[in-house]
View 1 (cartoon, helix red, strand yellow):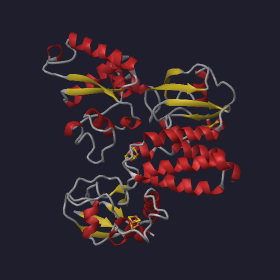
View 2 (cartoon, rainbow over the protein chains, first blue to last red):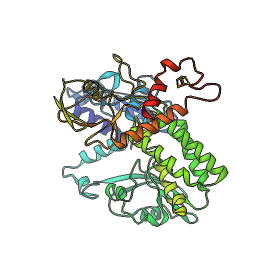
View 3 (cartoon, protein in one colour):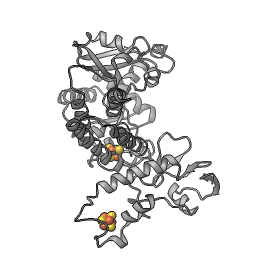
View 4 (cartoon, chains in turn purple, orange):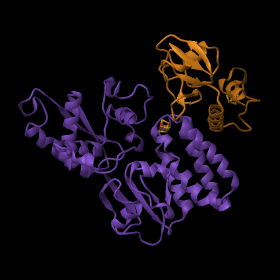
Length: 311
Length: 120
Ligand code: SF4
Ligand code: SF4
């Protein structure tokens, strides 16, 4: 796997004629860091990186950067700031990184899964990758399933070949009774136990009101208290917001206040309106993707489990 | 460069921000973190406007105008979001019995208070 990523990076660099690249790994992921440090060293040793790669006139230097562990650094502009040694918070767009990115130079930012896929696509003369999946969702996706399943792991799933339900079954099925699924990580909307007959593709999940997101699927059984889950997620966003813009910073803080009240005093009709307004402001006016996606989970869970009861 | 603001066409110079264009058209948008001559920061989000074709609202201080752009500065959506954001800003400002606009020595020159009154 590290070689596939490395290959993808080199191909991408060659394609855009970049001579300097960085691989940014979150500091906590020490195992990934160890592996990739060795990969880079070996690659230099064999002339796959550095000056005049394999005797060609293409030179490319690759450096590994350890992040200090902030969720928002998954946002490309925050990541760039972090590499420059600045505080990990987003930059205002435009200019987009491809116009003015790292050290104010045009920069391409891709995640490792994309890069690994690039290597895979380039491997075959006839493009077998694009023949997999559906018209709008080509190829495969690495889905990391966690939560209340019997075999949590990373699975490579071909788009359009199975439903969410099939994927859960692939992961050994749910422990206890299924309550809901988060298809693509905490930034995506949940789907209830009776909504999982949806095909795993970008278009089908979007039509169902959620998204493929990061591929970090979380399966939740009915053994957990919903309000505790809400508070846990809300707490995460309050802690991880970079705090630059008001809708995201204050909006998420206020949502947490409301949830705390909900926990103490039970659900009240008025929460729906307040959270709805906050959601709209955050969704439409937050400064980066972190904020814009920060309310999906909480709103959808409230919408599907709390609002319905009072409807 | 031709752009449309609130259903009226304007001819604007190139390479200016939406906010600058809107100012030239004598329309007022509230701003707090914007300062002329400084790089836009995009923190307060009060200057957001609706631009045709964009899913989210756009910070007018940071985005340059482009040919044929259709901008709405005070649509219902914009006003609603702006109001929520203003509420969040005021709520985080710690106004209480000890600190409030009636007793505050800054009341006559306070941007926050003026904008709060404008947005209502
Ligand atoms: S949306 Fe949140 S994370 Fe993004 S710039 Fe605003 S405060 Fe920071
Ligand atoms: S006048 Fe301005 S600074 Fe003073 S309390 Fe009111 S909003 Fe705050």
